[in-house]
Image: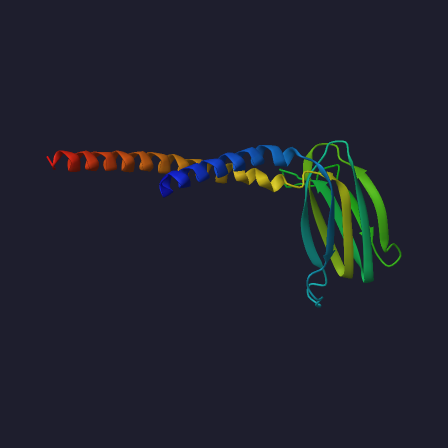
Length: 183
């Protein structure tokens, strides 16, 4: 078996595998934990705050997400959790938690109203934070991009398949020319 034939078979198998994983993996919800700590910089006087953003993959509809937030320092931490908004405005279902020196710890949960990703925005002002989210979400939602890679691998396999056929046909013609004496 030629190298080209092996290559197109491997490309086809990888392409089909990637396409299948891009459809199956993003809808598979598993118990997961996301831990965020910050801020990632040292505080300076101007600006006296830091904004961090995070992404929570699509949460299963109707499931509860446990939120544990802890703050250390003399400042404050504001946390906004909202379903991913397409309009750029804050949705009505947004959850806002405020931590400061009198309330340095929050342990709560929220119920996902739709299967959607959540944006997490954290504004910390002279305080460090640790956030932990526990819930049932599509941990592998980023694998939906594999559809494009799978398509590219299948296109490469098709190209290699026809190239291999052309080379085989050329070899057959050359061997016939050699057998008949060149002409």
